[in-house]
Image (cartoon, rainbow, N blue to C red):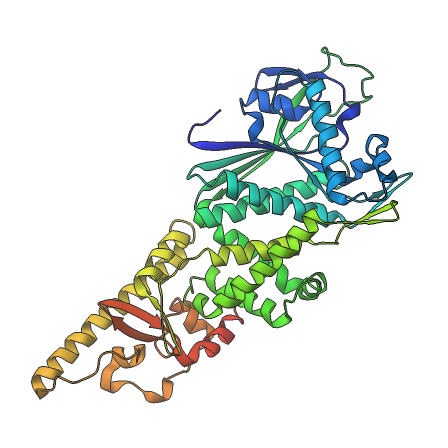
Length: 464
């Protein structure tokens, strides 16, 4: 394996490989005589076959070597997928004699009309299925503390497949980077075009494998890339989101709330998250169930049509955003109707997601937390002095106090309580003195919006 501190994975989108001829592929002065650039790349990068994933279109079932099983009246879709995988596995074994192992083969939705059978869905179901499978594989197999390098070969994809595969892999990579904090690099390759196609294996034909694109998602710091991608798209295409989500019990209000949450978090306001924890978890689970259905289920109609659920890139993007938001771990303190977050966890998460990436936001958050700590120290010193002067020991310090009252004490202007706007909220990283409450619990400081959360959330939605 290359790069001991990095998980290296090869991913490829294929069509039907049975007509491909062996040629000499070249990458970085490494040559390999084989029928696929995927295996040449795997060889030149010294990556094991158990770290190779190849996506096969369901339309391979139109081939006579698979279609004959449709004569069985009791045929089911899982059987069709198994037959496709067995067929291509046998083909790889025969054509690629260097390896006893076979890569992981996954059949995904595809579209098209063939002589005997039609495949109904849309191109985006191919995308969302690959996103679902890649994120699942990364979580199960590569969540081992190492960075990830995905080598994506789009040479053999046809029509919409290369573009859709690239988009899906990038989204899964971004999501995995955010939830694990590991760096995920995606490098895209394509070999030289060849025309006319050779009729036989020909070692004298040499094709370069070219590195055509590269992007890196820098762990927790890539949260912003994901959230802003959603926010900007949603603000332009709100109706499209609703149309695509008619299969899910997710309301326009839920979508609007998710948009507000994404705006807030991308701007350093993490305190809103625990108030919408149920919305995040509930809708994430709904979308996971939908993605699984899109990726694994299909109807066979009169042995002449295979029908998948139609999908959208936006379904995958919504799932990615919800997964990312759900991964932010805050120390939450709940008491009666109050929802508080420890100042220490706000500080740690601000460093985690904003420092050295969004320095302007991080500097505001860090400054506001420092100011708040200073004001709390002054307030409790003032209280102690007051107790001594008045010889009173029973002044309560166990309840939430409005930040403005702590800061200005008896000089606080009561008419300002509960009044804020988006400019003030973003200028103070959400810790605005007229809507933020503070409480000490066992020497820990907790902050809360209390009864003013709805007001804060409404103002947040007007940003961006």
